[in-house]
Image 1 (cartoon, one colour):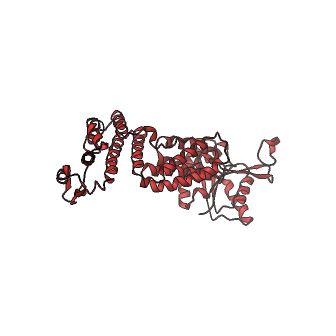
Image 2: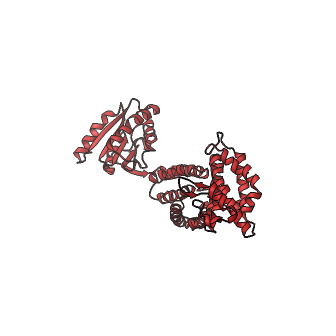
Image 3: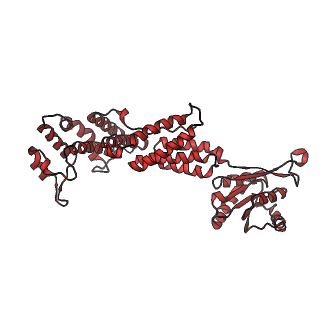
Length: 418
């Protein structure tokens, strides 16, 4: 990639020559008005005489030096094409807004703010007109090379908070990554940490536990370093503590099926609250019942995807073997109802009362609030979307049946970054 400098042209050419010599770009884009277009050749001639010759140079000419809209329109029409043709990346573009009218300088900054993070300005130690005019030739001074994204990042942090706290994890991550690539080196580690943290929750929200665990561990280590220099009252300390609790929950989840049940219910709540996807939420609730039955049957060596009839209680062996035999797969596979039916028979054989018995004792409520709602979902067999009321009934019924308190469910943090 070639370093490219774009300058607004107008007034004394000396600051522009000083900027070009300071940055030593391979490519130059001159942004001029009709009145200042004639300054380009003398500038290039002086540079050639001093041994500097850019590989490429272009000009963008605004029909007006005073009209901000015309200046901006001209830049937005011409600049993207030049940068694309030259294959200029944001990290290779430098914007010098020293020359030209105030409208030209303003338009140049507005047109490039999303394309680069490096802006420069040439000032001077002395000016004419009692210190308020243009810089006196020979007194030019590179005042500063600035990155406005360090200040704009405050707004980006607010945007990331809103996106994350409303379950828009992919967009929050994308926003953090864009900011990371635009801010200065000093600010970059923060957005690197934030990108990793958001990605860990995005992965978790997609049930990708192993990848999430790796990301959240890395993010916590980065966040610890960042928090070390902050006052104890800073909200990032709360974020760190919450992330540690989440890490504790995630650790070992692959081998702890009961945690997965809790996570299914937590995920269902996020689908409903953040996205209004009540069909998806109720399907997850249904799955939490199904998974619970699978966990219980596994204790007796029974796998619902391939039931061994020899392990079934005699009282239901024939019924289950015939009713749930999958002809094509040559296996006995039980759905929710059949799984709890087996569990109830096992409990009766042992003269015990457990979830199998409870399922049939409360079947009317479970059927009305969860099973029937799931079956009526557009995603399953129905034709109308489910609503908030149906979700709340299903969610509360599941908590009651599984004897789970809502506070037991894992919760994602609420981001507060500033």
